[in-house]
Length: 554
Image (cartoon, rainbow, N blue to C red):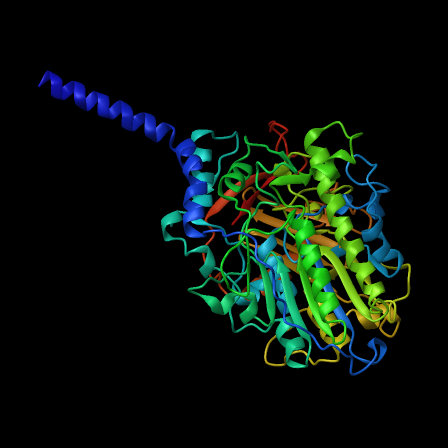
């Protein structure tokens, strides 16, 4: 009996030790699990559909080419156009800035959400993504488990709450996506003869088992699909990494990331080179091979989302930046600016520049969890919050044939406006069998339409709900149970909460927000997590009693 008791104690100690170290064990085997799910082969050439070798019409006499360049997690302050110099104030994003100098700068350009996937769904459909239940961002179950265990083992001063349904009841990430019943801008343009190509991040569902959600079944003739989250392998000789492993999201990304791509649903393979440059190289090929026909190119960069990884060359070019993480981040922006330069140069070389509409924007604002200050200045808040820092993003357009160089547009516009604007540019009617929330911006830019495109805009994500109506912005939330009211016309950085001073305004905006919420669909999958977000501090700054915060429901 004594031996049995010792054995039980010994086994209990082992089990207890394993459970206590469960996160480290999971993190150590996560890459193996991911590799088993998505075997990655060596690089293979991308065989884009070949366009016509001769043009039926010169570029000026056919519908415009349309290029959407979507950055990921880029803050308003991350381009020098807005602040004289990005990063530490010294980085010039000359190519990105030139889009506005040669076209228009939207000073009040808004993302459709403060997080990536719902914004992408709105961009492609021209609708509030909540109209079809796309309210929360999909992510893998293993990532959710890592996040949950990290919080259990190292809880912060503000607790993280998990949905009672639990991770086990989550649908697989590939089942969380854009319903095939939605009509994408790629489908509209393809139907009138456009060649359509997607490069990079998708995040709208789909897999070999559920192909109906994949880009090539949502209107894109060709799709170079981001199948992993690394810019280069972590131990690659040409990469410089910056990690914040004390952050749950950082640990989740680094432990599950791969260096991988796939083409048109084919096998997964390694890209060739740093991911931002690789996507750019392939985008240049698309332009060159389809220069004799109208095309729509959706270049959905992963940059500058974490994991923070830069090339050694870009890192070396910024040796004056002392902070290592900031230097890596700035080097990533440098690569993104190089991408824009190469795209615009290719358009000039092929004679397409004058009749090509280029839009550059970001899916949401800069993230707190990378631990860098000022990336959303002058705005308050971060990605995952509906304060201006989470949704007020770079938004630039260039179309020399139609948009006057050096223009500035101050009224609020929204990601969903891209659908109607692209359709109008191509001369395509928008669907009439559903509500299209976006507005064609072209008449406002050429002066045939006066006033503002929108009287009211909405953002919904669980209990975090926001309305912007005639310059008055209200954020309401259940965690904490609070209402913020700002007059953006005189307080664009949201410093003065007027909720107590203007109860009639709060009442009016609540009524409008309630009516909008009732008109939306139920979420297609439930919220899993409620995670606290400091509004005025990044994740490397400790919470102190009295700090403003809001919970992010996803």
